[in-house]
Length: 240
Ligand code: F6R
Image (cartoon, rainbow, N blue to C red; front, side, top):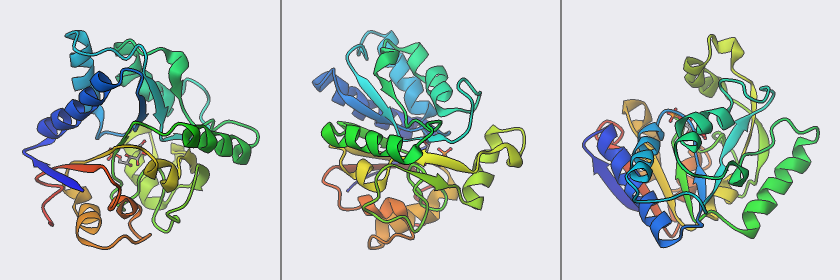
């Protein structure tokens, strides 16, 4: 594991964005595993700046998102597809045809989840971006998820619903289910970049960095991945 402790959110975002930049420059048709939430916003902003300055193009890249809420109508303001459009896709030259999400509105979620996982297995992500839940989740793989899990439907835990309520007008509007890449789907990525910012993440970071892998901290499954970079700000690193 490469552990990088930065001075703050800005620097964390910049270091993460530079790793994505390097990947795209080396391989313009990279398959980029992407995440939503507050943490990656600064990284997406930096990538947009690199694109606008002419350093990089996303024209030949593909994106694969980690997860999507079940039951939100297409175009809902909190759907992860819309989040990605607003924060990255509409600002760079990625072809929307090459942007993929779990189909969380499929009639048969087991079948569509299996297809997403097979799609990833055939051609794993060149790089996977991750945020970290306060409880150690990655994607929506909550504590207790087996490390060999593949894409599946999940019931969100109370703590995740509470943490995500800030994006909705009230807690009861947060969907109770989502479809997420499994831990194994994430682990297959060539390179993984996990970002964590703020003191709320400090305990999960401690479990990931200091403890042996255990399903009580899903992120800890990645500890011995061959190319994992964990980029923190000082608050997230405060219990190390
Ligand atoms: C988002 C995702 C989640 C978030 C995590 C942290 O696609 O899969 O695992 O990365 O909940 O969220 P923030 O960044 O909002 O603290």
